[in-house]
Each structure stands twice: as C-alpha cells, then as structure tokens.
Image (tube, rainbow, N blue to C red; front, side):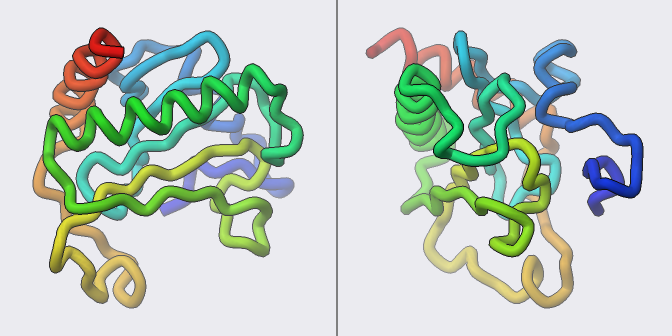
Amino acid sequence: RGENRPSAANDVECPFCRVPRGDDTSGLVVARGELVYAVLNLYPYSSGHLLICPYRHVADYTDLTPAEIAEFSAFTGVGMRALRRLSNPGGFNIGMNQGAVAGAGIAAHLHQHIVPRWSGDANFLPIIARTRTMSSLLETTRDLLAEAWRREAEEL
C-alpha cells in the first residue's frame, strides 16, 4: 500500500493531479465538475468509498476559492445521494485529514473522504491487520456509482 504516494524521497507525480487527465473508467473517476471531481479510493474502507478532490493542487482547505468550496460541498451532497441510491448505507463518515501529522496519506493535495457505513460493518481488519475486504470490484463499483451519480445530478 502507498507505492503511488508522492513524497520528498521519490519522483512519483501526485495521483490526484494525474488521475483527472486520464479516462474516467481506468482512473475510477465517478464524476467531474468544473473545479472538483469525485473518484473511488484505491484503498477503500468500505465499498463505494469516494474522494472529492479539487483539480487544482492545493494542500489546505483554506487555500480553496469560494467557487471551489461551493462545488466541493455540492459534490459531497450528490455523492451521498448517489451512494444512498446505489447501496443504501445506514450512515457516512465524511472528513479530511489536513497534513501528514493529522493522518493524510497524500497531504500535498486536498481530498475529502465520503465513507458509506452499514450497521455492523466495523471490524478490526482496517485498523489492526491493515487489510480490507471488498464485496465488489472497484471498476464495477465505479460504473454503478457513476450511473447513480448521473441520476442524482439530473434530479437537482
């Protein structure tokens, strides 16, 4: 895990800058806006774990423009509705880890997690064993979630 993470010690390009330049399917991009995009997490805590990212390479929430904040917020809402439509989670964990000391795996590029949760889904695997079990392939989840996202966006 983490072999694609940029750091001062390697030449790896920021994945959140690279992903939107490619095609949506292989990049696991669920939706694109003018200023932000939604992508599935490569290392999901649960099925459908989304990341909302600005296209612009910024590290801190306070570096976002008002327009970026507005679209960021709108994408969070549409993402939650799309996940409810697709898999009916009982709740969500939504958040950002600002800086490496706060737990950000890729601290150089701001991103927000939307983690769908179901009753009884908590277990020791992600925390202790650093292992995750997934009920569906990421590509399949991306396709289903992209369609649910389109439906939700049309209903706004």
